Amino acid sequence: MDVTPEGCRAGRAILKWSMRELAERSGVAWTTINRIEAGSAARDSTAAKIIAAFEAEGVELTGDPERTGAALVYARRRQG
Image 1 (tube, rainbow, N blue to C red):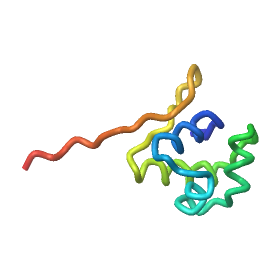
Image 2: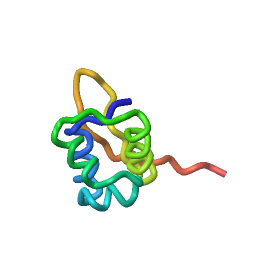
Image 3: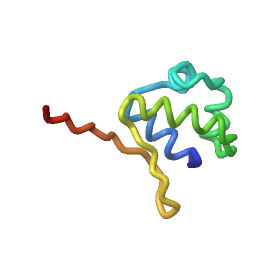
Image 4: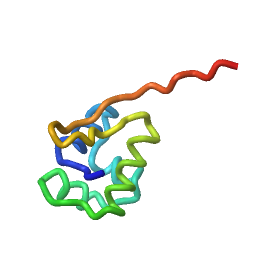
């Protein structure tokens, strides 16, 4: 999945993260986050790190080509 500028900003907004915090959590340079949010394409390996950082906090980026953004997803509790 690609990381769009809108998705990246939306994910950060949901979590109230700065670019630097996303960089720390994903292991990606903050300047790279800045470039992605300005419209540069992310490498597949970089996108995977960013997506993993968001998903670890329950945020999923939208992969629909018709729209872009992020959503907070709550895990269902297991019955047991």
